[in-house]
Image 1 (cartoon, rainbow, N blue to C red):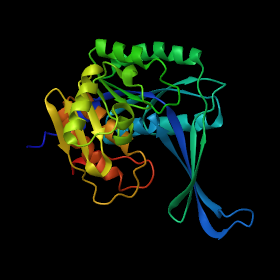
Image 2: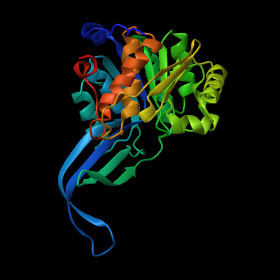
Image 3: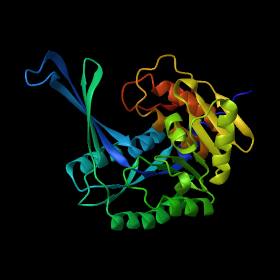
Length: 313
C-alpha cells in the first residue's frame, strides 16, 4: 500500500477547523519528595515549579494549530481566574477563542501533582453549565460554522455539548466533515456525524466485549450503520487503530518506539485527522497520518502536540 501524499505546509495553513467542546485548564505542580507525612502515610511534595497548559477541547485545537492549520475554539467556561488564564493561553497559541461565559460555572481545572517524574495525585475542579449559555452557543455555532472546512466535537462529558445532535445535523447539511471524540454510553447523540473516534474502553461501553476481530468488525459496522456514520475509528493504544467504513476495515499498527505518557494522545489523533480532512484528505488517507502523530506524542510527557516537521520529516 503506497502512502498518500501529505498536504504541503501551505495547504495546511489554509485548512480551517472549528473545535466545539469542553475546554479545560491543565495545571501541573512539580516538586521534590523527600519524606512521608507524619499526619498520614502519604508523600510530602515540596512544590518547586508550576506549569499551566490547555486541556480538553483546547488541547485538541492546540494540536491543530501546532500542525500549521487554523483552529477556532467554541466552548463554555466560567467567569473565574482559571477561565481568563485559559483564554490567555488559547489566544497566545494562535487559536481563535469563542467562549460563552457562565458566571455560575466553575471552569474545569485538572491539577496534577508530580514528584520524582511520576504523577502522585490529580485534583479535578468542575461543574455543569446553565442551559441558557448552552443555547446561546448554538447561535454562535451557526455563525462560525460556514467559515470552516471541518467541525470537530470534543466531548469530555462536562455538559458543554447538550445540543450536539442539532449542531451535527446543521454542519452535515452544510456539507462539512464532522468528527466526534465521544464520551459515555449513549452514542445516538452523534448520529449522522462523518466519523467518531472512540478508544477501546469507550467502544466496549457501547457495543459490549468482542471475542475476536471478526466479531468486532460486525459490531462496529452495525454501530456505524445504525448511527448513519461514514466511519468509526477505533484507537487501540499499543495495537494501533482500526477504521471501519463502507469499504470494510483498515488497520494500522502502532508506531511508538517508547510510550512515556498517553495523556492527550486521543486529542492528537482526532486533531490531526481533522486538520488533514480540512486540507482535503479522505478519512482513509488521513488515518495513517493521525496514527503517526499519536505515536510521536506518547513519547512526550503530559498533554503534548506534534509539529508538521515531526510528522512529515
